[in-house]
Each structure stands twice: as structure tokens, then as C-alpha cells.
Image 1 (cartoon, rainbow, N blue to C red):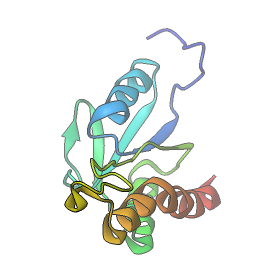
Image 2: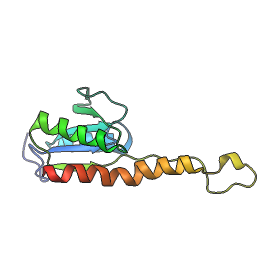
Image 3: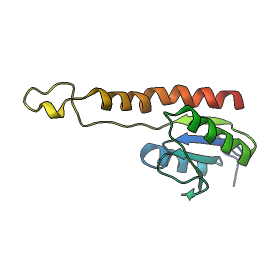
Image 4: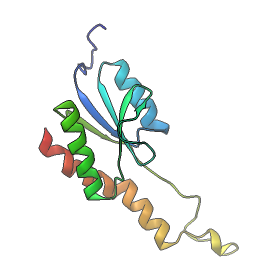
Length: 132
């Protein structure tokens, strides 16, 4: 493989939410640029290989799960060069619906969306940055 203009050869990159959607496509792109990609996702099994990426099961809203994921990556690859927070969820519920109140966004759904879409970025970065 020729050297990538991105300089990602021999870099170990974790992608949260990398098992599907944008994260999965990004994993393929980074692999094509020479990176070693680790998919961190709650839908995979640790040690599984998915589209050429090593997988680590991780619940990104739980600090202990994220710390274990980072530890697994560092133990296997002896380094961590980058983290891409790509995990995200959405809901079909709406803020208010006077005609169909059951479609309204409830606190439990909002808390889950906030946890995955916002809090997980903080938790993952806090665990990963000291490894750089």
C-alpha cells in the first residue's frame, strides 16, 4: 500500500458507533487510508472482526464500559492514536403533539438520547485522551 496523504498508516483509531451507518462507512474509509480501526459498539462482540475492523463491545454511556474498551484496545494494539465519537441515536417522538400525546417526547427517551449523543462524547474523550 502506498503512503496515504492523511498519514494514517500504523495509526490505531477507535470509532464509537462504528458497526453501522456513518460510523461503518468511516471505518471502511480509514482502513482504506491505512489505519487500524477498532469498532466500539454495543451491538458487537469483543474480538469479532467486522468488515476488517477489530470490535470491542461497549456501552458508551457507562464509564466502566468505556474504560474497559480503551484498556482492551491498548492491550491489543499497544497504543491508541485517535478517537472518533460517531455513536448516535434519534427518536421519532416530537416535542409536543396535542392530537397524539403518545408521540410526545418523554423524559426517559430524552435522557437516553442526551446520554448517547452528548454524554458519551465526554466519557469517551476522558478515557481516551490520557492514552495519547
